Length: 452
Ligand SMILES: [Zn+2]
Image (cartoon, rainbow, N blue to C red; front, side, top):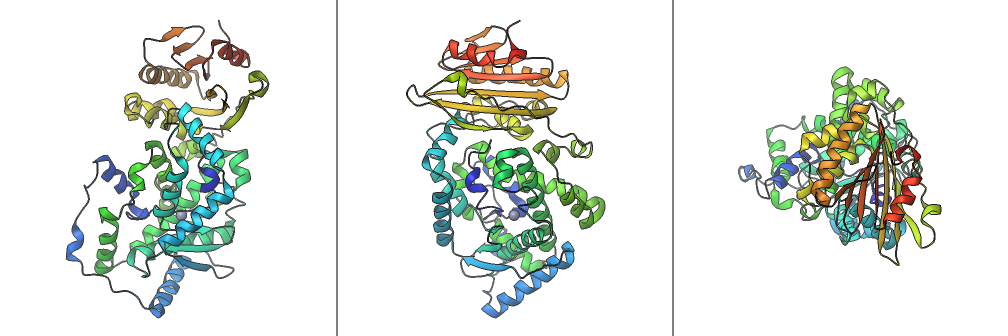
């Protein structure tokens, strides 16, 4: 579920500004502490001298040589680079948004996320994402134009040089393995979103590990300049504090979980081992989160995305359909909009683990302002299914209230919108609708889950 992805697919390969891609976990610490928990080590470090244009060109060549030699990849063509100011990045982001997505799609995305409890429906997702992709990025590589962009205030400072190493790694990945051909494409996002997410984690993990290696070449003074920039809490873009919790988690997933995934294989066999990953990429968020699932070839089960059009009839339109994967299953349980219905971290993780596959659809009726949700999961074992069902009942009690809960072949929480969980030996089905008749009609589409 990534309704924000039409844009994410386009303006991609973000590096994280203000706190450094190498330490995005640091941001989470700062946020968790409620703000200024940062370090103030910078005052001992003198201001970094601005590089002349000639020095900048020389530095870039030096970084490119380092990345080529270290990563062990040779460019087939020179890579174009553009420096953009933060204002120019915002212009470009807005232009890309206008080209790629409509306000309607954004509103639909918000409604779908609200049905899953991840966000309030009235959040202005459009403004939030424009801010995130403008103020929240340090650079990107665009596989369509095959250009790198580094966001710069005019210097080529110690932080921007690590961004350059990161983005240049993407360029070499693209020339060697083909980023689009590897599955980071619109087509793959629509056909197999879990595979798309796994490939994104691989390419960001790869570039983040390399970026870390480049950072390790810094001597004490250069490291001081770098630390001064990334530890400057005041430079953390305000938008990070405004993001719904799940969105921040999802934003860092490729850089954090993806980096841990790639680092493991790098430690095992260097960059040659990482190259092998590109020839046989991971195919799900589950495989990124659990190396043993990747190595066991535990590929996702195909679960049909519920086709509700005929059942719901006229006036209804599909506003979202996709696959939650283990990652979003976990986010739903642990990172909803309101902490009242967050499950404990370890409970949510354990509940999402054992994911076999899933599919969901969300429909909307504008006349009645009504949303309908159908989400089915298949689990590896009956124990995994039972564990998720137990966790979901806890989640349901917290989110919808224990009082309304009634049995009827499943566990139903009857509020303005009724939410029901049905189970089979290895499956779980979440249905949500306002009318009992609608719930009955939806349930009839899943005969395996019928009333006992
Ligand atoms: Zn990147």
